[in-house]
Amino acid sequence: MARTGQSALPIRNLGEVAASLEAAIRLCLAKPLKRAVHDLRTATRRVEAQLELLSMLPDLPPHAQQRQHALGLLKKLRRAAGQVRDIDVQRDLIRREADADKSAPSPDPAVRVEARRLRRALNRDRDHAADHLQQLLHKQHARLPLAFGELLATLAPAESMALSEPRLIELILSRYGNPDQTEAPAPPVPDDTAQLHELRKRAKLARYLAESAPKSAVAAQRLAGQFAILQQAGGEWHDWLVLAQVAAGELGPAAKLPQRFAAHADHALLAFRRCLGEAISPADSAHSM
View 1 (cartoon, rainbow, N blue to C red):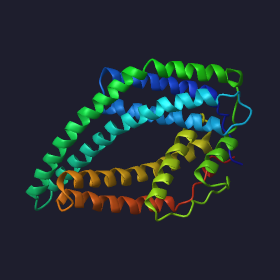
View 2: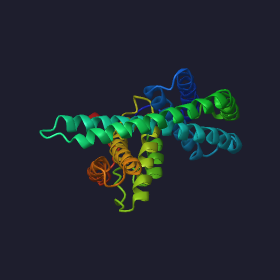
View 3: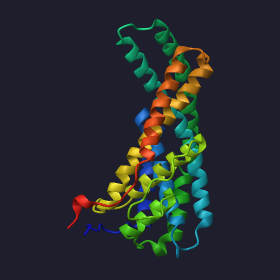
View 4: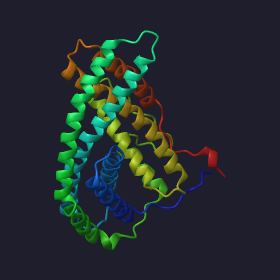
């Protein structure tokens, strides 16, 4: 018999992730370094995940207006942070490719020239994107606490509402697209790029929802780990794909780096599709009693 973990507390979790978001905003206001921007974007995703979870729960106090207000502020912030984060990832990938070429038996000088040119362009873009992010943070850093204060005050009568681990897992798998909570087969792997992106986003949401469970909720945490692997595989594909497009726009499609990045994207897509083809199961036989 599988061990059952403690219940999740969705409204209290919302308050906690909202506080984490405020802390991440303060760090980015001080200086939008790579780690600070990454943490800010992740915090917005976690808050959005908790709001999505609340939308699936019945019998909560009416809070649609407050929820939409908070989501509107979050969306702007997530997009601005995402632009900076994407450039940070792209610069790291370019550096990785240039270092790999430098270590190759026959290094290609053209690759280093293209890498320098591309990094210079991305450095300029990063400065502009970071300035935009900080301007937005200055506008919103006082609005967000007020918005979440109003939302949490509206939800306060249901603050102690608990969600059992089996019910949380049921909701997560249902939202991902797997209605069978015992052994959830993966949805058919699509060929369409837009559908693949949608599955990548669903995996990210599912991971953050599962991670909102207590650490003692073993099956939910195991599920979070499975979705994290899926999210990372999809994220790597997406990062290489976007970089290939950016490089082609800056260097031209006939340049060497865009072609190398596109090849990495194709390889990452195969890995992502393999992950999508595997079943997602919350069963925890390792901790059975």
